[in-house]
Image (cartoon, rainbow, N blue to C red; front, top):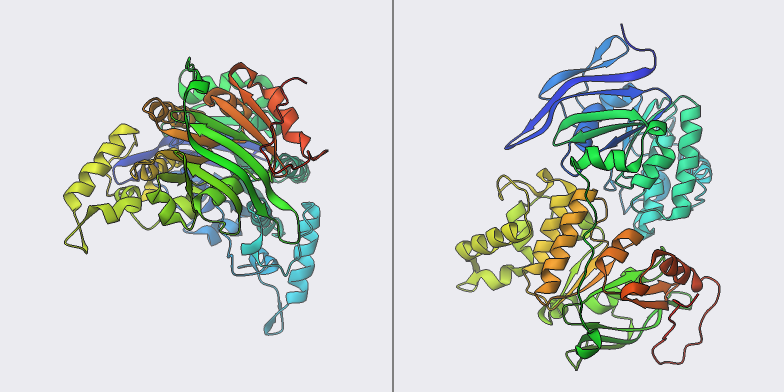
Length: 524
């Protein structure tokens, strides 16, 4: 007889992909009215298991039960009929449509033979107010920032009246701290109403705050489960990794004052539509073999600095100097030829071509170097270079001809990094390189950063996570509202100092003199 506290029971689910056993006889209980946390390293099988429950994929073997009834979901429509919805880690919105059209896609209300858009707009306003995001329902989704788009994705599911289970795969990866707290408040309201939530996140502090029950997977197998009140973060890490892993702290005795800068950025400005600046007279420099961290809150202007340097924002002003020579920034191909490479924050939208293989994604940035006879690709050379990169950064792939989406998130991120490294850059710009990957994969990414920095590559890393930036950076600059509010070296790089500096620009603006702002906040 079924357990009255369990909404859905998955029994010995197995999923086999070509060359990969993604799930190996995994059993899982989805508890009613609880936040069911599913956790594990990238490739552990979390998202695969959720795809079974949401009807996106079908298991190779095993069974699922709701109550005493065995259920089979041939697609997401079947799962929705049982009240199961899913919010994907990667956004699945229509950027060319407006907000209410996205929210009611495949849930349209009609008035006679026509769409009842008045009801759509009213419903969209209501659900967005509940999420404390009163976005204009007529606004085009492609024009919204990523955090707002994530809220639209959440709103799409909350307009379902018959929703019983909501699967949330990394829902906070693009949200600010304030937005995360709003989301957690909504989740508590939903579970209080009897809704069951499955929550996948790599942010361990979040799990301890919002979770009720945790299930741990490792290498496609069930490892353990427990109530959150009975466990700790070390308990989770131990079972996720099979042994404790920490971020590798850079420990290099280098007198950076004796090393010439590879890059100098002077008075970088990016105008904001309507007045003001997204980047406000920011100056800094980067030394050969140095890892420079950029820290700041959402909207601080961090990614915009990279966009200016790479030629994505031609409207910027300021001076870029590389190896003592000014660079006239024109476009991305020119900046790649100048020795710059960018690892973008959103790997799915800007880092990968999802229809191509692992091999083609890795070599995409340098195909023009592998040409022979003008129009043909030297496939032998391409093979050799891709094989070398896969080995160098330890991409776990059974066959490089497999689709890129067959890889875990952590290995997809390694492909994006490998693609940048293949251009043989002198300066590597990494925007949130560990976003959406687990602690084990993060450790591997940091080992890659250390490896190339020791070989002389100069690297700038943007990260929102304090533990990461403290561990990986030789020096950190802090941005707030587009202003440089702090610069920290060596032992000065402390979490409390970075947080303090990150709020400075929200309360006071230092006067712009047109010269480098040397606002070092480590004395407070």
